[in-house]
Image 1 (cartoon, rainbow, N blue to C red):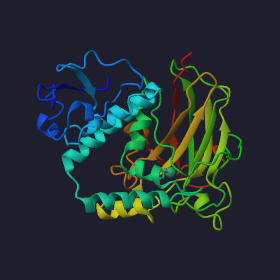
Image 2: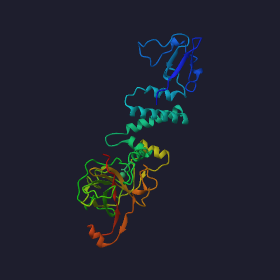
Image 3: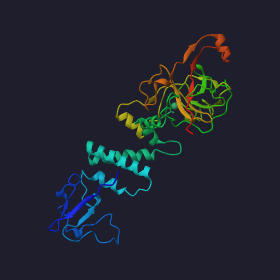
Length: 352
Ligand code: BEZ
Ligand code: FE
């Protein structure tokens, strides 16, 4: 948006009056002295004199040079960014200022409320360290993470994406198809199987699946380094020649997001619970295709309709069907009842 300029004309009496009444209230300018006293903006030093120094001289002032009003505030700040060389940064800052100012005009916070908001954001920053990112958690519980994720992964038929979350680790152990990622042996055994396909249905042999989940108590290995073996609930698998994959695990539990910081206090103050429904995370990659970050959700899990981070999409809810058939169990290297979940994954070809 082009910066709006405030054109001021010298009146016969040598006083400035606004020529853009929609932008600035002329009454607000009455305190200004003769034009020669008014700071001129946007006029480089050494510029030739303005068209005429005669009584009808047209001088250009930005709202920044005038007094700050509720009406002109947003324009004044937007104009201050007018010389931003990066057009995208310029666009983002303009939108941010417009929306933040509209929010403030609409809600009219008291000074005490504004100070409380600043305290909250300060505490959110102070809670961040190498392990904990409270700002991302704030973005999660406000639905912003999911909105950004969804906008950036508009798919025509590919598997839907969802949030990455804070418990991914960069190097999951490589495992063979059919291996278990459960290194403990408690919980309900479970088999997850499916195929990785391209959008046209062609299998994607060699696709990589990075998989991680909480245990049956709702904790990730990294949350309990002294309790769970390292890399419990994690594995990196490679799809077979026909794009198929399968692995064994246990049915994960629902769990709370970290709620001992400012974000937890916000949930508390708003009577929101901190829980996420039971799910298994996936990052799936294949040459020539867009990487997919997603989960499968356990159908019927508590909180499936009220995920604290708004990450559930219907297409990602899967039945974990109980199977009590020794023959089928033996096929998967199991000896007793288990749950079976099917998940076919469709990747979108990368834009060339
Ligand atoms: C997770 O699923 O691991 C997660 C996602 C967002 C916030 C907290 C946890
Ligand atoms: Fe998770």
